[in-house]
Image (cartoon, rainbow, N blue to C red; front, side, top):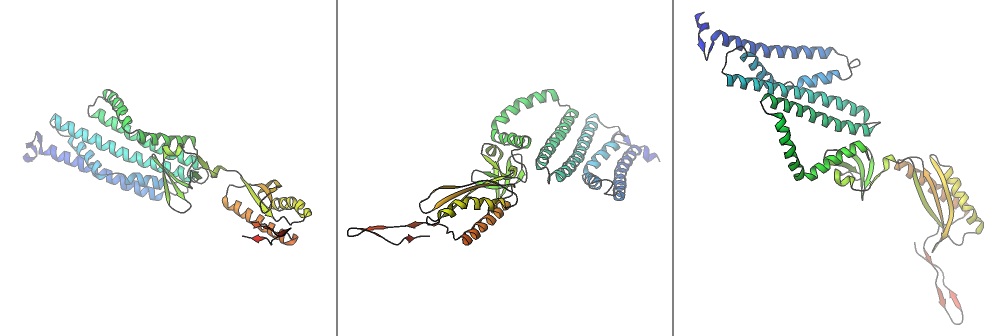
Length: 361
């Protein structure tokens, strides 16, 4: 037993064995607690604890063995008499490891919480889902910034002076990355003001599609032809955006042309006929139908109605039914659609000769 009393690096063998035992016990305790939590999670019912299994599973999955090992080394070293510099280095390493582990756990909790809220809101409140995504990013920034400042404080860094230096340096950096910061603030403007949200169908200049993602620098839109369009957030806000998802009803203007040979009584009845056809359609509000003008080759009737739906398919289905109904009525009434025609008058000997119409479709 005298061997146990022999000293190495200022500590007896007994002390070194005790330190090793404390370190191993710390690692074993962490592994046992992790296993206990895993078994406890398996007994939870999803109906009672909405998503708690996924949350705890994700948090436990972020527990890193290397960080636990550093903390265990610090626990064992605390039983030894070590040189001041070495003891300080071990303590700093343990604090950094603990802060990194706390950051990983906190990031997992924020990600899970934001994901659950976005999943619930995306179907009925896309704007809220977009806002929560931005808040999740800000939450992560606050979490890691706080941990960084705490770590620097433990390293003996003067945080007050550092904050002043960061402020001056931040101005210089801001001038160097104006475009990036412009997109960042544009992203926050989109999230807060909500000119559009995920799932909206928008038109920007000649580009159109459905919003898929609103990021910190860019917004991604899926076009009707399938490709993904990527817009800079700052450029997007400087453009004229047409948001069709916010449209409550669609105003439709269409024209019908009939031949000049149509009898007067049928011309007079045509506006009422078109009105009756439009009013017979579902989800439609009739506005007007008029004999608009004398065209080059036709008598032009203009009609206006509103489709009480923002869906483009509803508009096209309604217009198709109206067009078919008008064609059916024209066939029954003997009314002809007009198309471009040209009539030539040829100067003959002492009289004008009327040539047959030259019809072009």
